[in-house]
Image (cartoon, rainbow, N blue to C red):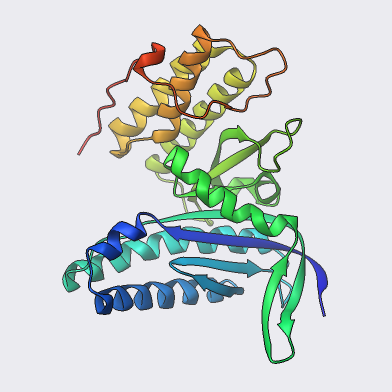
Length: 292
């Protein structure tokens, strides 16, 4: 019997898993996946989540069903951040075993779905169905465009206690395949959890706010201002954190492109070209210095 329930859904995938498998014999692949699934499942369960299924190297989990979880969005996001840290521990273990490092991309969405046992009398499994059930996989896939480790929907973002997280809006996208409906997607960058904020936390927070301002200029077609701030964010992320901040690089190039090729009057902030702009469009590659 199915029941309507508001939940938060998690979907993750290993980046470049096909290439990783090609480097390994089957026994090594089994060892790596077993360790990965074991560690990730424990983290999910520690936040009252339930693993629905493993799909190849992907994980689908739900928070808020079958048992109700009051703050299911908070639990899901905290579990996600802990899983990202858990992958780093797996990579330390893999190095000792002569196995390749892995990274994961995660998508999170909150909404109403139908939950319950699916199938027939001789083969049942717990599952979720409905339009909202497909969104986490779409968000996971979008991580490839922006180089982000996680993306959450606006519905999940609105359920989070803002004072505990550093979250930045990454871009406006068409999740629902409705041309009249653009929706921001967000990256969860850090979680404070009651601890005293460090200078690195405060700096990351400031850069997240700068990115947010740049995206607002971008949405309002002030592309030269947006480009300048996106560039500043990418340079400072490289200088202070030693990371190549692909979202700010991608958005800077798009802002630069739109200065030469203004979007139509009805434009709502969504990038609709089938590829990213490059030098053939007159968009120059910025050199982003990353401190080691």
